[in-house]
Image (tube, rainbow, N blue to C red; front, side, top):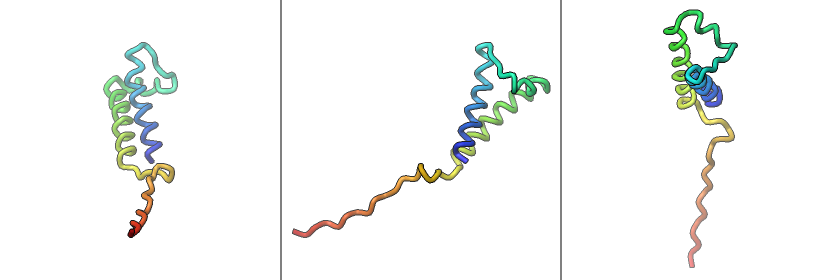
Amino acid sequence: MKKVGSYMAIIGIGLIVLPFIGLTIRFTDWIYEWGEGVAWAIKIGLVVIGAALFFLGKPEAGEVELELPEEPEKAE
């Protein structure tokens, strides 16, 4: 879920930033048909839900850190 959450948050941030530099993504133009307030709610919702999934998600198998067992000390 961490990967999905990070993708959602990145897409949401991109949708917020792109119009300020004069760009939009044609695929997401439908959110502006409902009005500016609804478009902002969708964008912010993507960021918030994505961040929640990222921080609350369990680490994937490759991300888990393994602890090595301690070696017994040798008596001299």
